[in-house]
Image 1: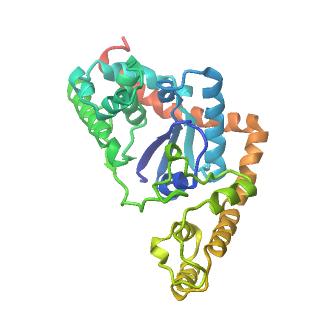
Image 2: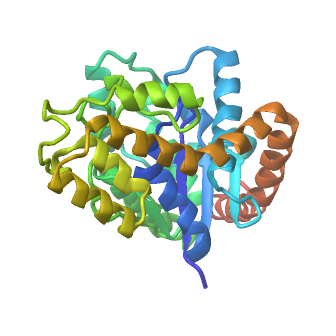
Image 3: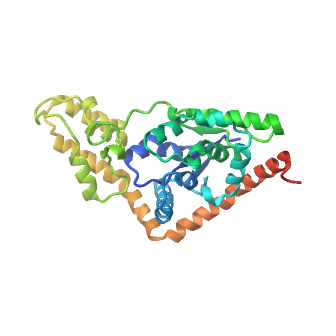
Length: 323
């Protein structure tokens, strides 16, 4: 039996190639080896997004992005969090067995409020809703970064506490911390991040891609100078999309000399167009046909609710809510 893997994405604006090679490509791979549960977690986004029209648009945009990049609704469970209302019912039940001290010690809450986010109840209860996302689907595995391990520890603790108090209701999930992925550099050589303004968007025009690529910071070595490919941002990004043979061929040219950074950037641009051009066209189709996206999401919610309702029936019986 395949393991059940759950992950969520917040609808938060334009994706860049760092998102794809760092996280999204791994999600797509899970479709082959596991039962992938992928939710667009718009309820979580309400802790920071306060404009309804913006949240609606970003939710549909995120869905179109994922579909264009390779999420297959026939090979996965793909839905919008708010379309499964049982998750909020479960969040209440879990909140009744979650100690206040546990939430007060949450690093993410402390970090966000320290950065100026308004400390509303939703932000404080964020880990409980995350627990509900995981437990309602009887998830086996949750891939998380190191910054999310505390939330997973909370989910495991509360699953065990609930099971001890009410009986065997939930699968106790395991955190999966993927093997370290090399930091994907942005156009300035720092980690690629929207907050640094150094990204290369996945879905952009050729002209926008060209502007981003030609703006990559390099050293001052001339065309004839020998260069170290492992210290070059252009080469680091090219490697993400090139075959082993192509990587070696370009690395050899760096080391030999006679290759200018302008030519290397042109090769990187060609790889971007080759890799993401067809996905961009697919993304445009979904943008032009939002009703198709809505239908896919509705079908996904219907599919995942069968599992959610089974879990909630166990919860209601165990807690006495089913009287």
